[in-house]
Length: 221
Image 1 (tube, one colour):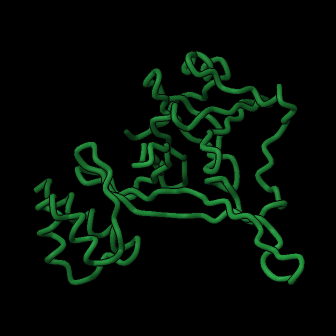
Image 2 (image 1 turned 120 degrees about the vertical axis):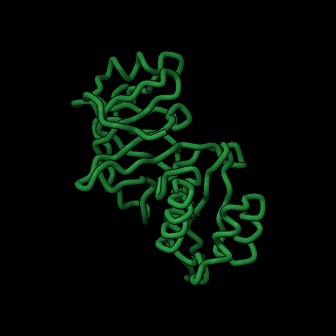
């Protein structure tokens, strides 16, 4: 599902749209501002470096509303700012969201992976065979050895990205190794045939985008 532009949502909307899973009012926990520049840990758990303007599509109501928000990939929550009010909502109650940009809207889906975890997937190519880029982070603790004075003294967040294609309500991981690509495409004749005709390998994001754009375009002929 792709998020589209709508009127700016209010805090009341946020609660009404998610009545069964009321958002957390972070002011009640003493939080007055989202600190997106915390330097106590290297790296960042957030999808974006600052709050973004975009439209959120909620699962509970099927309604879309526009907010200023960011995604905490580590805790799997959406951080929403409405005026001076700050709210937190579990990622599992979001269907999709779209970020407003200078060249249009960049769409993201929230899907459940094989570990039954909700993850964020950026839509790189939309169509019968949708190409997705998974965004996640890994928290790595310090490995400093005080006795030997070796290792890393700080904890850090490491950004991680994997690629998938989505079709027939099924999420399929897309590895960069040729043998694994052929295996992933084996049950999809259109992808398998198209891949055999390629004069390049799917070794990076741009090549994957080119391939899936070509496949989807051929289905429209």
